[in-house]
Image 1 (cartoon, one colour):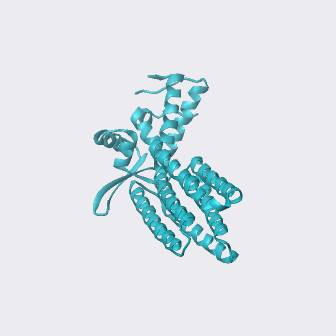
Image 2 (cartoon, one colour):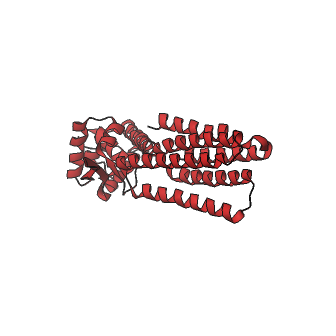
Image 3 (cartoon, rainbow over the protein chains, first blue to last red):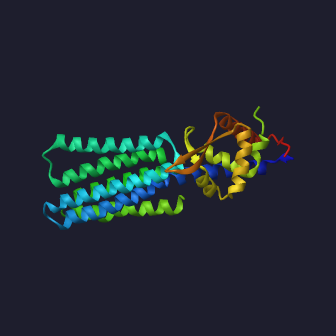
Length: 185
Length: 103
């Protein structure tokens, strides 16, 4: 049986489609993490905007712990589907980034609450950009978009910065995560 | 000159190999996840994997995760080489030279 040019092209297209589909399916677990942290940001920043007391710190702490637990559960589930040393390196990268972000805030202290938020947001979005280099450019674009939104809100709407980040920062992450989980499966 | 690989050229096996090659060389995919990803049945995927394993193109590992039996599949380096050569042969056909393979 001869393999014609059309058949060869069809096979190459199939190969390309399956490879993209596989990479996206594996990366789609990151979409659930994005949704989880979008929800954390939404409620956390909303609390920062509306509540002006020490209670905000506790709300953030509880939300961060819940977000961490959710991320761990998603990572565990995905780790059963695709076993790769990359998964544990990914987790260690985020731990290192969170540690260094806290370190940079400590070094730069005293900082006003808004600058502390902006520093944390941009550092974590740097993590998304780096993830995008490994998992797919869409993740990097989310990181860049949220960074741009954070800078815009910080300089143009300082009085509503936390609300801005709740709606647009958290919203972008939830929306992107939903899109990726819907179309990358 | 790269040659077409009869075993890999079969449509389902081509898709299985493409999915495995898309991941890092040290990444193992769980059987049911691969089945759902490619839309194959248990028997169909199992049969094709057996042929690919006999050729040394994939390695299959059975293990227990949380006390449940799980099967993981990974493309071997021989499988990656064979797949790359098959793709190169297909690209060569596209460039103009027709090849034949007995199927």
